[in-house]
Amino acid sequence: RYFDQRILTIASGIVFIILGIFTYFNGENNDEYEKIRDNQLKSKSDILIRSFILVFSAEMGDKSQIMILTASLSNNPITILLASLIGMGLVIFISAYLGERISHRINENTLNKIASVFFVAIGLYPCDCA
Image 1 (cartoon, rainbow, N blue to C red):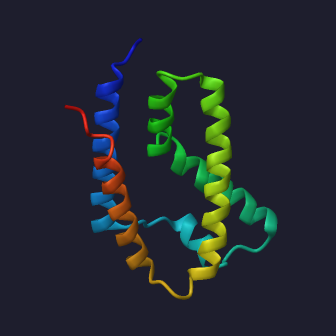
Image 2 (cartoon, rainbow, N blue to C red):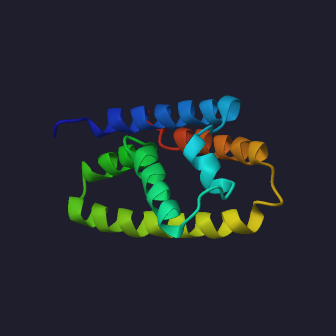
């Protein structure tokens, strides 16, 4: 093995905690996200392309990739790939559906605060290394 799984687990927990703190104090400020959210885009292909670029660039080196790397250390990479694709697809579907349903009821700042609490909780969970 190239990496000690325990060290990588602790490191990924720290990254989640840092992301939670960052999200709590700074939130998300992205021009592409703002354009998509405010329906400033003209065509469906424009929305599709910009959404793809937004998700692709946001996920590169993101926390989900760190978790997939951690899981791949001790499991079959093909199984991890398939499970990750299914999981990510389901998460994106649920996020898009719920985002549309609650966008008029919950303030974006409040949603960032809730997300930050979840990031910190996820970061603390794997750190049971004693």
